[in-house]
Length: 361
Image (cartoon, rainbow, N blue to C red):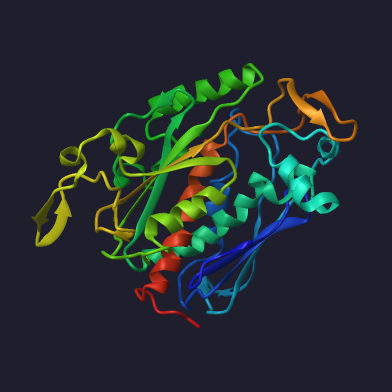
């Protein structure tokens, strides 16, 4: 399925090397202030940074085709289209017989047969995150009207890790001036060096994106099966190359004792807060009132120019493959805005489903 949501619904369409990619947003209330400039800014934040990103240079000009008039939503479905211009499919056709290691080629060929669009990975390409960034701009605008803020940054790339405990104010919008989306200039240099070293060795690196959100009402989420953390994890895992999601202390909580991991309550200015946030802002599948804290792990880019082992599906023999084309040596920096968008789309949907935002239809 290519549609997510019940109250605030987003459908993505297109393919990496097709005419273009886009999305349709249904259920968004009227009079949300969001125009061309804001949507374009979010999509531009996904573009590769010179030197550490792919040479593929898409203009990514956003076309608002319906649902937004004079920078306000109309209440009708919102359709956004982004044309693919810089396409080169010649390097992909051979992957029908020799699937790339680490890619969806093999299971997609088995599942869809001749119908699978192998060019650029088709619907499994990271290109499909461009319309997610666009849709995220609308969701963010809706949530801002409810006092909810969302920001993300690159917490680690390869072996370079940001060990500081950053707040939302530390990173909100500020990281986009740095190519790696790091929280500081010093970390940006180290992360850039890590990416360039991998590229020099015809290899790639992965990374972790941390996303924070505040202003959520207490109790957001629909237990038992449509929980806040469950819905967020589901959407995050739909982003290509995501292999892990943590909330708060995550897996390290398994090594702690209850006395260490429990977040003790206190009053602050008449409001219930906790002394720590090991739970990442989620308890029992509902928001606790503390900031939402998600870490999303991205695997190293699968397309690398180094020779790798594969199989030839035509001959039934083992083979070697060397991937050509234009690929990012690390996709984590470009994924920062996509993780923000994913969080925004889930929160917008749950806010509508929970009755915190009135449904348009």
